[in-house]
Length: 356
Image 1 (cartoon, rainbow, N blue to C red):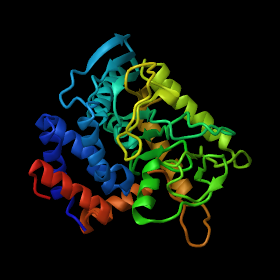
Image 2 (image 1 turned 90 degrees about the horizontal axis):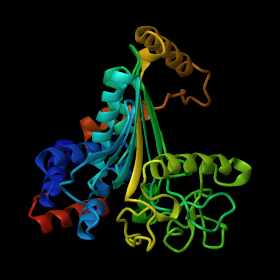
Image 3 (image 1 turned 60 degrees about the vertical axis):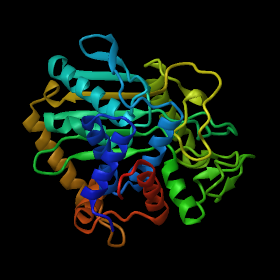
């Protein structure tokens, strides 16, 4: 187990070593460490080497000039200047919250960014303002639409954070695929097979090969196959791609540049926009009803769902419960980093003369 604060400081120092300001390095490290604390190991410090590879390939600007390129009272489009999505997305969320305070809601599309970590981190920034937060992003084309052999969409996550009163917030954060690609990377590192319904091979056949995507296959949309509703996952992923890419002027569909994961470092020859795109929003609860009434109703909603008759001793959870449970445990016991991730971090430490 590894102490979260020490891993956080190491991560900050690596970001500073590639040229990020102290402020941006702290913010970027916070996004990654929060993923690990919440049990989302696929999007935590395991991704640190990927951001460094983006920098090595000239696709990451460690000191971006993030600017607004289009604006109305309640909306805006920002250009992330190839910055860390871990920094660009919080900038966009702050702007969404600012606009929501004035206009009731704020909606920000983002172009020219990079991988932004866990969507739930960004959506949750709205909670302290008694707002509902939204965050979504498109991603590299690793996903096959229903009935397709071609990879045309990313895992394209959606997160929605909703405040409550005495109960903890509702936080739904999920990929629009059967699984996030980071989970496949974890299986690859452990030498394990994937559950059926996660991927298909290059010929469109179901497979349990965790390396199938690298070998010409593709991740499956949420649902897995048509009989289990993959067309719905495909539809959700398409909505995220349109909101994040088409609306913002970023790349979309098969043209979204990949995160610098081993085996996916090339960028499509044709570009239809700028970088990776995000879409973030904030909605004032009191734009619809008194916030106290709403939050009390959310408490009742949460309490009723938690009290549902359950199966085999597994109590019903609300979105966000599992992450809170992981967080409480890992703040005490530490982060369970697997050996390949530790080796990767040690290599970064040796390269940048930062002690791990």
